[in-house]
Image (cartoon, rainbow, N blue to C red):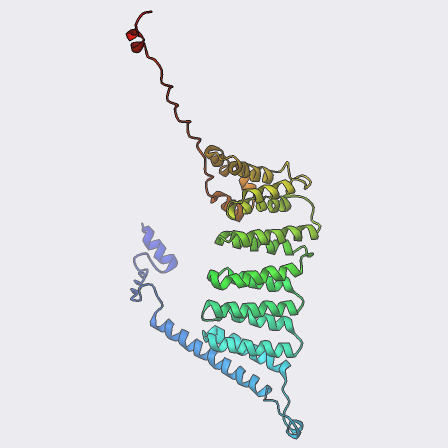
Length: 351
């Protein structure tokens, strides 16, 4: 009787014993990095992209000869910014992919200039927006982002310019980012009647809160409140969060209790705010500073009502300095008036 292995060999032509063994994989000697062959292919690819960028750049330069004056201008070739803008853009994209950032920025700038001359400011702003992250330092990045934001404003889209400035500011150091955030606030203020302006201004408030600039955050929050009113948004959570933020940011800005109290009392006139969770969170914190109490402050910071605020404002509330509790000192004991004691009375003569 044939065995199972023999039947399997007869049917399939191979047996388990004859099956080829898997080849062992070669050990990697690159410590997890790319192999030399992969690095060589990457260098070749970058060189090809750089050569493509050079070709496109040369074609764009040929379309933009220097302007001449007088009779020579009649006979010379005229610049063609419409076609040159496309060639500069292709060159910039190729340079950026090849890692040649300086050449990419130069090409993006020239493409932006040609787009402006061709009456296409939207595309010009987009070129500067793409060039900004490629700059070598934060100052150069901020400069390109500022130019892009201004160009978007010229194109009639200030909110897009504000968004570009704020997006890049989040990745920069504070000193370089603050002018961009200020630019975003200014551009959003010009579109304060738009229903999209409050969302952007809320991001500005959040940025200032995260960096500890509470005075700037309070000013941006006032602009946000105006934007909510101008956009005619119905009373609700966005408005209530903004009103509560006014009180909390006033407390954070130098612990100005009087200013925070005035802001809170004024906000109580808004429909529905007094009964909201946001008002409760703001009032609990305010009362802790008006009548300092350690236990009440701990309860206010841990209150679930605090979670109804914007995350950045809630973090500011949790980082508020603990109110100083003044302990009334006991009145000094008054020394008894000098008088006769029982011992003295015994020594007096009897009358």
